[in-house]
Length: 470
Image (tube, rainbow, N blue to C red):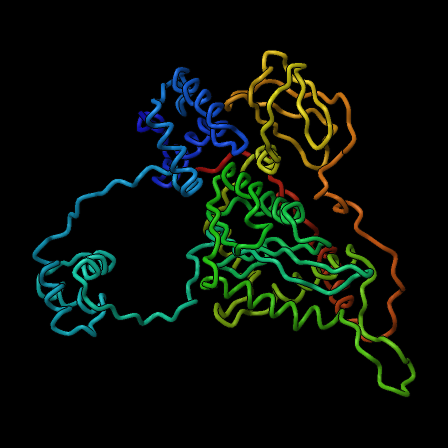
């Protein structure tokens, strides 16, 4: 059944498997609500099994009770990844004689690498399986492995393949602690997204990430840690909607995160050191604090953007040997970014939750009351909303199908509590004191460069918003 759901599309295996997993989730999402009783869950499962479900190709299909039970157990066991179909086991096509010879060579001299074994087999037989095939065979035979690559030296093959994200705890600005959300392109070391905020939550994360997706395109993968903001269900929803593979690093195993950690070390030593006040020399002409104190969060973000563009992006990287700006520009020229319609990106960052419609045809959301279609009375529906504007009409879906909008009846909260302070996060602070102002000099330089070359807005939001082929 599911094989027919994805026929006809020119998608990769990974994309086809994720489409099927998302479809399975759409079918069972009402059933996996932890608030349901066993009786309610059983009734929902029977109703779903008795009703044809819209397939990915538009053809209605029926899902058996056994399949639903298996998917529900898989979801409880492993979440979204457990809903992915199993990959096909493709029979090996390599010459068995070459594999036998390779294993004999490895046993003869265990210190031989896969590359060395392959060279010997090619010299002997004229051809040989790939190094990855040899490695799999050696593992299956229990032969010892030789690792010559140092851990942590991985690098993406092209720009927009992997964005590495993390959060950095910063100084107090206007009496409040700050946090930096940043995303770094793994191949070019280019800062695709960076924003300081007063809170370390999913709203501030989205405010940093969403403009980067509009400006630079959609990466294949986002690699983040296990902080609360990165584990939030809303980020997982956004990535799933945009076809981004969201990967969390294993706890206590930071391999692959070295680049963002080194970037944060650079931020600390080159940027934060310039805005951290220091005590003046006793008896000096200017007692008290000197340096480059920052008065507001907006000013902190302005200075930080200037430092990134005028200093960090223009400094050759120790590993690549070129500047992040140059490598990023060359990478975009070689591999055009995958762009999506801005409306689709905006939709992906909407939030969703489930509610049961009352006998009056209403639902409650954060103490607000909304009216929905009376045909939905008693049903478990999904509300898709903008956390910044709870007064706007809210989209309603019933088992994955559009069911109109929920109209506000009574409102006591106009936005989600996590959005508080995202628009105006400033508190008056004393004016900066005297001292060498390196960061503001960088900002002047950056502003002059922008005025000299102008800003090509077409590169940020192109007129052609059609999706590029994957």
